[in-house]
Length: 82
Image 1: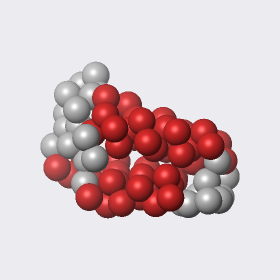
Image 2: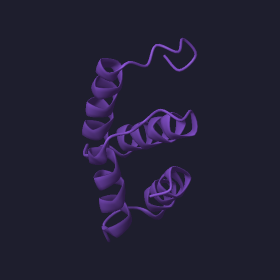
Image 3: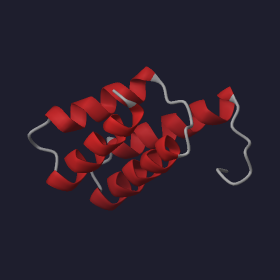
């Protein structure tokens, strides 16, 4: 999708919903895929919703999150300026 440039509001919203669900998944590999995809979106300057910012902040403040997820969430937030 990134290469196609087809980012309209509906596509972004659908992608965000799926990725937010992935971040809440118990399976570490699903969480990893979701956070890596969010990082790619952020680096591609895709506008992300406040829900994504809230979830990323929650990851950075959650003492049960792995160091890897905390680091990636912090990197995304720094890139986005939030």
